Image 1 (cartoon, one colour):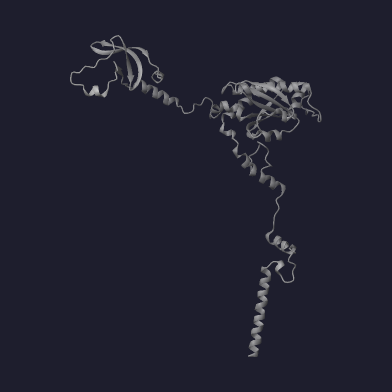
Image 2: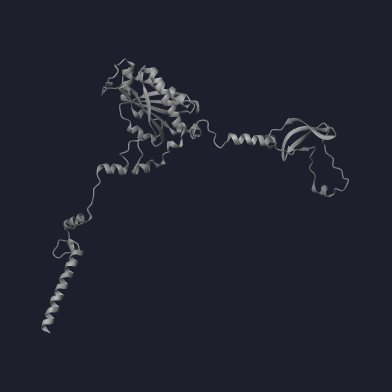
Length: 373
């Protein structure tokens, strides 16, 4: 019995040791015997080794927030996509693509005549931006040309970057071909440079007016030239604008020109810009209209000649008997009213022709006459 008691005590001691080991693994370091309850370094080290926390790098953070996308050049992502979700997509105005395609062709010819050089104009992208975001992204120095749409009574803006400014100045003043335009930093644009760029802007505005002419005639006039974006504010910072980026190449020289038009400026011709192609008629089918017109001309219409009308009380009507006579004030020389249903159409004289009752139409009754009476 003593041996069995010793054996049971050994098994119990082994089992108790196993339970203590399992309990020590389940509790934190502060719960372990003899451990400092305020020392959590060991516990944090164990948790880091088990969980394996991963820190995002700067590229991943920018991608998450959407700050790595250039404004208007790429599709927004992350948080910026949510912020810009309220913007109107320019693709809902498909006619703008046709207008800017015409602008590219017109500017290619006009700038060749202006510079007497081989000029190639290409469209980079048409996108939608917020006005405030775009103004903050303009690389300075640059020239900002504010123009006004006379018929639409609103403004737009043309931005010319420094590379194109120095290239145009170099070409117009007789610079050598095949050499890069020299960019001088740290000084404002001179009067000669401003006037030369203003001349080019006038050509671009004339071509932009011609591009919109088939859709809606409009005159774009230059309002002012600015070099500070704060002085070129034409709308509120949160308003949506259409941004067209064009690339102008003159041999080895060239630069970018950007046309910014707020949606408020395009609002008067919004219905026209919604067309899928030039001359589209919304809700109309010319073939069906022609067929309907032919069928209407061959339709029989029942007309009524109202010789006279008189208001009689119901008591008098109940007293009518066979042979009763109702007197009207209509004379043979008076005009009678010709009606189609309940709508008066003509005034006519009543008479006879070839033994049949006939009416000779004298005048037409406009549809609004009855409503005015």
